Structures are given as C-alpha cells and as structure tokens.
Image (cartoon, rainbow, N blue to C red; front, side, top):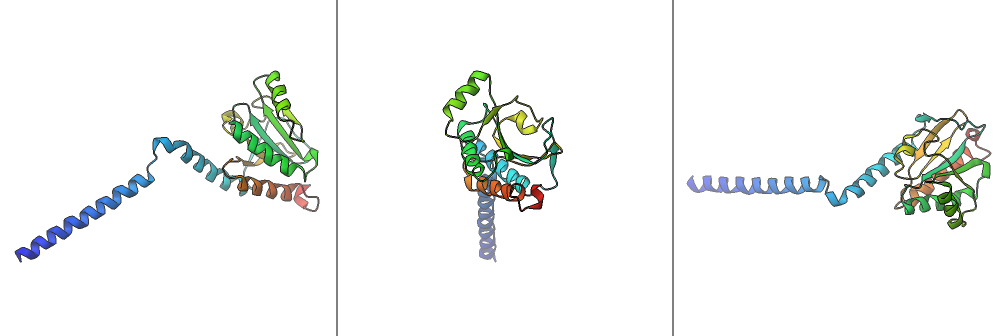
Length: 195
C-alpha cells in the first residue's frame, strides 16, 4: 500500500504539472502583448467593421447637411490618416469608379490648409475622379472625429449614412467585395434599391 500511495501522489503531481503548464500556455496565447497591440486593434477593428459594414441594413447615422436626390458612395479621408491606408482606399475607389457615373460617388478629403490640398491634388493626378477639400467634421460622423482611417459609406437622400466601412490595406479583397456589393445594390440601374 505504501508504494501504491507514492505512485498515486507522483501521478497526481504529474497531472497537476501538466494542467498548470497547459493553463499558463493558453493564458499567454490570449494575452495581449505590448508590441502587438496595434495588430490586435486592427484585427478587432477589421472584425467589427466587417460585421457592421456588410451586414448593417438596419444601422444608420443621421448626418449634417448633404441631402441629395439619390444615394452616393462616399470615400472620406483626412490628412491625419496613414498614407498607405489613404492610397490603398483611393486605388480601390479608382477601380470601382470606372463602372459608376461620376454623380454616384464623391471623394472627400480634409487637409490642414488649401496649399496642402493643392499639393495632394498635384501628386495624385493618377486618379481620374475629382477630390474635394471639405471641413474635418462635415457630416458629424464619429469616424470623421477620430480620423484614424479613411472610410467608405453610402449617403442616402434623407441625409443618413449607412454601410460605414473601414478598408484595411492588408485586406484589399474585403474592400473590393464591399465596394462591389454596394455598387450592385445601389448603383446598377436594374436594381430597385438604386432608385
């Protein structure tokens, strides 16, 4: 019995050691490491924006001003956005704009001053659409106030902004899918929702 008792004690400690090791290794897996905070934030932002942007038919935000007769796709960016994020969004807008009328979309940027806007326009002549300089909080949207990333949305005739979408330069395919869904849903003449 003495040897049997020792065997049980040894097996118990071995099992406890294995359990503790697996618990702590999983805990480290899920903890946020300081150097990866930015990647984790981008992943969460991407996940939230994917769920809300592509599936948000009931979600809308009333904007200031800008009432129109037809819905339009808007790309909104700021001088404070990361340069690669801005350029990536502009390139994707360029691609989708070729299959849309110029009245169906707007590209609106906010710059520190008029000179910066003119320099930007001079450097970005490769885009075939006009880019307008507007005040930073023209629509009163939360994404304008944070100005962390450029974003797309559809502006409706009643002044509401729907389908807010933050494109990620790391996931261009998702941006293309979003733009194609929006184009087909609102800007193809055969679709009753495009009216």
